[in-house]
Amino acid sequence: MSRETFYDKVDATLDQIRDDGLWKTERAIVSPQAGSVEVDGVGKVLNFCANNYLGLANHPDIIAGANQAMAENGYGMASVRFICGTLDIHRLLEQEIASYVNTDDSILFAACFDANGGVFEPLLGAEDAIISDSLNHASIIDGVRLCKAQRFRFETRSMDDLRAQLVAADAAGVNTKLIVTDGVFSMDGYVADLASICTLADEFDALVMVDDCHATGFIGPQGRGTPALHGVADRVDIVTSTLGKALGGAMGGFVAARQNIVDLLRQRARPYLFSNALSPAHVGGARVALSMALEADDRRAQLVSNAERFRSAMTTAGFELTGQSHPIIPVMLGDAKVAGDMATQLIEHGVYVTAFSYPVVPMGLARIRTQMNASHTDAEIDRTVEAFVAVGRELKVIG
Ligand SMILES: *Cc1c(COP(=O)(O)O)cnc(C)c1O
Image 1: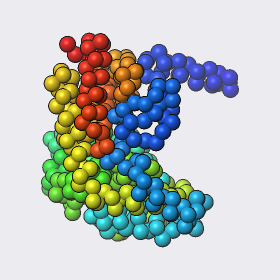
Image 2: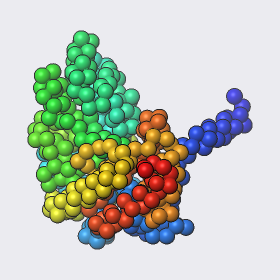
Image 3: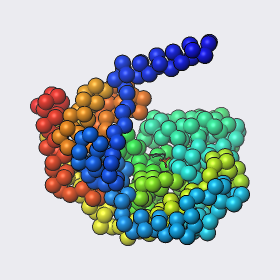
């Protein structure tokens, strides 16, 4: 193929994405991340699509923590961790994270995408098996691809199929079996049944890994995550999660596990070895966010009551919702164009939400994923429901 033909092919792919109604546009926000934001060309709108669950993204104490770390340690590390990129505060944050999620130690990555990308390959080989939930996050799928282990996929949240896949892995004569699940499925708002997963793991002598990105900081006692929620923190072998959602929402990810696993990842995990250390400001901010999360029962209670208020009013209004007991509340619309039109009209009504369609969710299951946060007021939630009802009627989504 000639060079120009290649560029034509790229254009054709772009056209196809537009024609399919799957084009994602990015709106420019011109204010800090918060329960309401100023959108360029639109104005002030309520924000119901951030991962800012505890409302900490713009908290002055976290900004102060980031500023202090930057004042003391400068802007950048200009090094990977093992050369000359490890600060005392990196190690402190790693130990604080480990204690929060009840493991020996943890290891920081630039993002949870990297944590999931790097965790499997050093730990498992061709003689081992990864048994993965079918709705696991893209970064888990990519991480599994980078690893030589045999792959088994179970129907999302189906314990019968998980058992069948564990049986199949044993029949294949594998050595180690690692069950991998999201703690919370981000497109659906369902919490994984970790108690049943751990029972099966015991029966089949398998390890368990949980990606807790949509739980760390706000699910379970003191926000310690889905393993703590289900009382199986001692049974879960590996937790991966992010500093980019409830814990201040900036950047960074981690793997938390038994000491020898963390030690091996420090020696072998490629996104750790070959990528820059987290900046001082990110580390300082995250440490304050983590200490705030420990004390954030009031914010967590508010988040639960906000989610209940929205879910109940939207159900009464006739919308089809999915998920359960989580501040991710998807409004199911089916058609990608309807979902897109609805999001566009909602922002004109002062509500910022995002439509999700294929390939982020299965074809024909387009939705608007709303996400509550602790800083939303009752009045803001009610206004959002009113906007959904007005637009929903206009688009004949509800009667
Ligand atoms: C957001 C998310 C990630 C990626 O986290 P980053 O730190 O933003 O890279 C990984 N897994 C799940 C389940 C997520 O929701």
